[in-house]
Image 1 (spheres, one colour):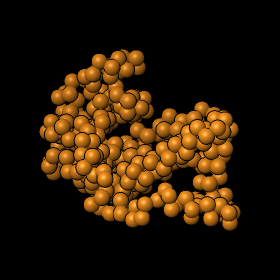
Image 2: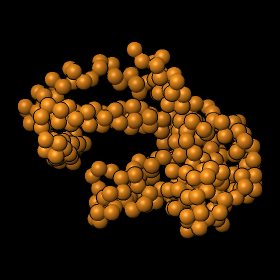
Image 3: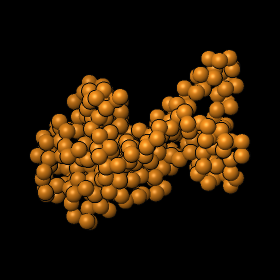
Image 4: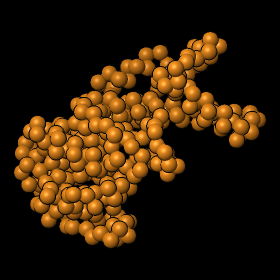
Amino acid sequence: METIAIFGAGGKMGCRITDNLKDSEYRVLYIEISEGGLHNLARRGLSPTPQEEALQLADAVIMAVPDVLIGKLAGGIVAGMKPGAMLILLDPAAAYLGQLPKREDVTYFISHPCHPPVFNDEESMESRRDFFGGILAKQAIVCALMQGPEEDYLRGETIAKAMYAPVMRSHRITLEQMATLEPTMAETVSSTLAIILKEALEETVRRGVPYEAAKDFMMGHINIQLAIVFGEAGNPFSDACLVAIEYGKKYLIKEGWKEMFEPAKVYEQVDVMLHPEKLKQHQG
């Protein structure tokens, strides 16, 4: 039986993983020092293990802590891990910026959830309301073996599937590709566009349309628009809508925006996310 240590087990993401692994086939140790985190573990009938003891026993260590802390904590954690153990990160940011210490006898594995898709086959209301995933709704995941023997990929992927269960698909990609997916595609682009949709709704309401009417109109149109664009609906936009799209691009889309996907720009986005104080120097 493999032993897994969850660092930050009582935190926001740590609790999600703890809930999925506490009754799994793994022996799980919980590393937590915050008052709130300890309270969350106690509510689950779980007790923490001292960090040094847990690291000496663990075959895999999951870093369930905020990205901005990984660079500060990784050195001490990796130094305490036994040879052949695996460090699992939940996001590519810190690894992509080179914040993990050099230690060749430890495997580095990164996995991130795709979250339940917009178009799904969930039958229950509870499953459909599991927007994040990892509870009831099926989701895909992406995984990258950054460092370590090839056979460790399957080992890491198996743990990731248990962490994010229920998992319907797992995709093997590189660390660089994962950074392109997030932040660039999923946060810098699509999260920004989602905020613009909300602001468009608010502006419509400000100009006199009743909120419920505007929201129903927006939610329904988002549904069919996504279905058309991603090939789920089987029909195209109307000719008038295509004209409106070209008109909208003129006001909403900055020329050259796809430069954000260039490696140097991806690095810049990750760097700013982990060092928010740098944001102003990139605005202009």
